[in-house]
Length: 103
Image 1 (tube, rainbow, N blue to C red):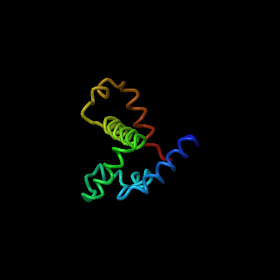
Image 2 (cartoon, one colour):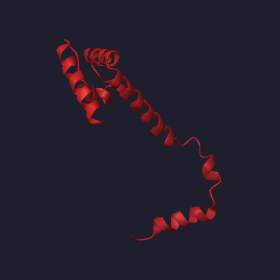
Image 3 (cartoon, rainbow, N blue to C red):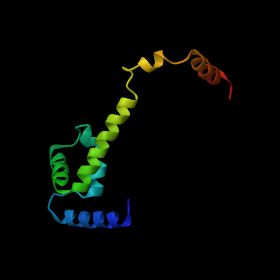
Image 4 (cartoon, one colour):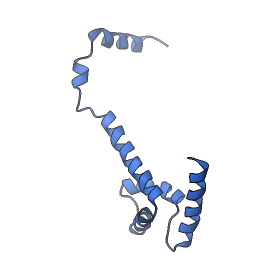
């Protein structure tokens, strides 16, 4: 993150602290896992969502976070094994041989 963005984020964070019941950008990051797991208490979820409505930077952060989760899940999706069927047998054997060697 550039210095200018960091400074703007800190200033916005200070402004958010002055709004009653508001979480800062940094505090929002600490809640993100529980937010996606639906594990935040009602009042914390409300504060989290209020912050998102008011902070475009955190909305982008959340969208990027969602995309990262979706891409990670897609990368490990076992339902598409069609590529494995076309894998050359020589490559499979080379991988198995290298795995079986003692370090």
